[in-house]
Length: 180
Image (cartoon, rainbow, N blue to C red; front, top):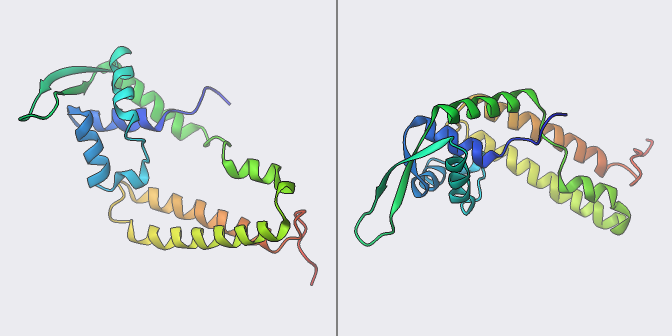
């Protein structure tokens, strides 16, 4: 399968820095204000850790330390040539390798016997409702997505998940559909 899947936080930060120098707070604001947080859910607390790691690895470097009024100092970083190469490698890996199988639902399926079957059916109905809501929200996000293919892909994945959940809801708990 290859190496570990690339860190979304690392990829997003390098991508944003490839557009120009930024400090950590500005990265956070871009993710919040431009709606990118929906597409790239980065834990805001990790931004500074990732910046330090990238700087230590030579993928970014500090270009200025700024202070506005009584606010804390903010270090602005820019991507280095090594950082651009690293970003290209991460992007290529993302194109090449399917997303990992780590998903809490996989464990829930493995431990299905821990819950009553009628409760599982209720939870599946809730999951189906959530997936339908996600599909509706994706319709409104087409304009805010950095690339329209992102919406198309997310719709296809959500529709596939919805179909799977509906099949499970109609099954007897052992993966067998009732005969009609």
